[in-house]
Image (cartoon, rainbow, N blue to C red; front, side, top):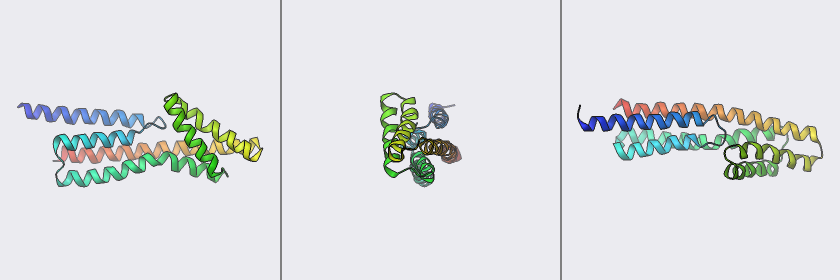
Length: 167
């Protein structure tokens, strides 16, 4: 086997390994696994060449990456809104999740978002039971976002596999 074939096997294997690790990372809320999978696909295209099929698949991967990156916010916010949370409270919880993740990764956001949502809703409504309902709804939305992001990640890896191993 020539050196070019060994390099191709290494590049494909390494890209697949990083994508699979990123897929497992999607089980951790706030981890940008779909973005990591997209970056690996971009680097793969730069190293191995895109070709017509590669560009089409990469465009689809880009759309999926954006959807995966927004899934947390959409699912969590929608569920909290269903229980009556205000947009201000949801925004504060989102901000607390981002800041918490940066300051105390990876659990800071997991703790910060629900705590801030509870405090904001309790301050707004002066009703502990209703504030807890919004936090429970946020947690349910978070669970659904994990399912959605994981599914998107699987589809992204399958599409990349078609591109990488199908040609």
